[in-house]
Structures are given as C-alpha cells and as structure tokens.
Image 1 (spheres, one colour):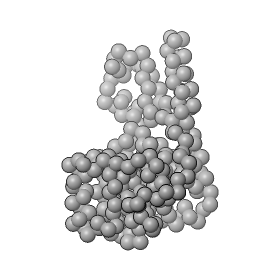
Image 2 (cartoon, rainbow, N blue to C red):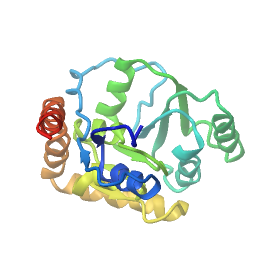
Image 3 (spheres, one colour):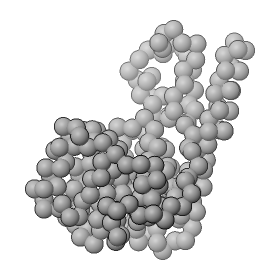
Length: 229
C-alpha cells in the first residue's frame, strides 16, 4: 500500500517516524494529520450503581497485553484512600490474568472492572474521577487521554510511543512501572493539579486543539497538494 500510495498520512509524528523506520517510503512525504476529538458529553449526574461513591482513579481500554493495566494493580497497594476503575472488555486472556492479580493482591474491594460500559457511564467516570491513568505501552494516538483532558482532569501516562506527543505539556509521565514510583507520581500530580486552578483550564484547551474541523482541513490540504503534483 505504501508503494502504491500517492500520499501517506499518519495520525501522529510517532507513527510517521515508526513507519519510515520499518518501511521504505522512498521519497514520499508523510503528512501528519491528528485525529479530531468529539466534543465532551453534557454533564451526567446519574452515578452508575456499581461506581465508587468515594474518590477514584480511572482508566479504560480493552484488556490486551500492551495496555499494561496489571501495573496499576500493584500501584493501588500504595494508594489505600483511592479506588481504581478500569473499564473495557475484560473477557480476554490478559483480562483473566489481571483479575487473578487483583484476587491474589486482596484488592477486589478497591479495584473495579465493570467490563464494557455505556457512553453515559463512560462520561460519568471521566467527569467524576479524581485522576486518569493510562500506562499503555503502544498507542498510535490515544483518544482516552484527550477525553479525560477535555473534562479538565489530570492525566498520568506512559512515556511510550505517541502518548507524550498527544498529551503535550498537560500530561504527566510515569517515570517507571515500579509500584511505589507510580503511586508517588499519581499523588504528586493530584497535589500539583489541585493547587493550580489553571491546570484544568490548560487541559481543556489542549484537548480542544484536536478538532475534527482541523483534521478535515489537514486532509483537504493533502488532497490539494496531490492534485497539484
């Protein structure tokens, strides 16, 4: 497909670099056009019956090995005042491993895995979590990070692949996957975020820079460049 293509477009600079590293693109330019972000849902005040009533940490994604969710389980041993919600399809081999880790760590009352959730439930979790965490090892873009930011939430993410690029200065990076360090990073991020009223505003503004209007203009510019060749 790369050989046959007139133009190449990727959704992040990381993906563009990765493509050029592994595939011979010859002299073809690679255009980076980030995805857009759907505007946030209206505030929903209906708490899911299973959702925490106290402060909680949120993450989301299908339970696949590269999502790296198991690192969050050990982290929670050092954050006893918080509960953790990881939403997404859990009926996978990796999901079963994470469930087993939770049981072995005696954290079944602290870590909730609701499985696949509705749009309304997801909106409530983004709007009401204290912090969003995303330790994924491999992402071409990373929508959940921006979805949390557009709700004005602090985010702590992996330092891998496209995530630092997409999160920009508003994202805090896990320095490692060592449980104590991860917990300390979450705590420090919460303190810093709560002490600076502008933090939520900056997060929302950063997320707002990813619009479908901008994505459409980016593709229109690529089409124009191709037609002028």
